[in-house]
Length: 191
Image (cartoon, rainbow, N blue to C red; front, top):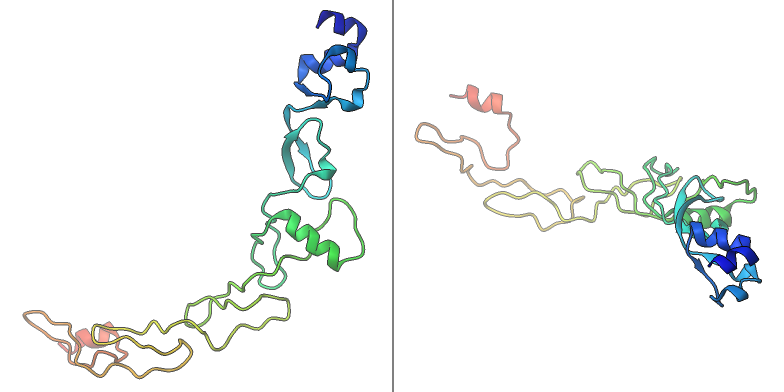
């Protein structure tokens, strides 16, 4: 390496700080410094977004695909975007003309709407800025008791269970049918 450092001071500096990858590893072949690529892992700021990435020192950030979570607020449901940054960059580039760097990810990958419906299920329809949530929840009804389980879709009304309530203790039993809507205050004032 000493002979190399006298003849090729730049190559010597590269060897001292980082490991290099070259098509030809012998010192006399380092005359073509374009063939020398440093492979030490370093953090570099990516030009198209606000993220940084660990990459080989000799790698150009422009060619790196950002794999960080986008995190931008979606315009459809105002939730943080869970897609990868590069996916939202691609969608934004397809849908916008102006491109200043870093790229403001104003459009996001298609995703299912995460809004809770009245029944407490997620909407699940494709989310968009002009989206309205599904009034007919396709999930299974969650209405069930010890006597039966509703088999209808969630959005269809189901009749309440008319069997006697099974709650009892040695002093009391429930005086109303299983599917009745009752307040615990009303129930306990009966006794």
